[in-house]
Image (cartoon, rainbow, N blue to C red; front, side, top):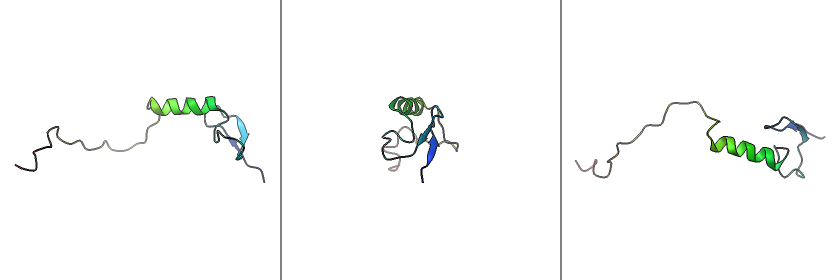
Length: 63
């Protein structure tokens, strides 16, 4: 049974196969476009902001 998927970048339909070195992308170009979007922080995961530590934590436990 052959499985087909759509490239997440350009939506081109392609066969999901070990012969496709770029899967789930259709090409190196689409893979690099997606990587660039991650690097530019275009994708986010919703959630609460992380807690931040005070700037001077080196001696805070000694006081």
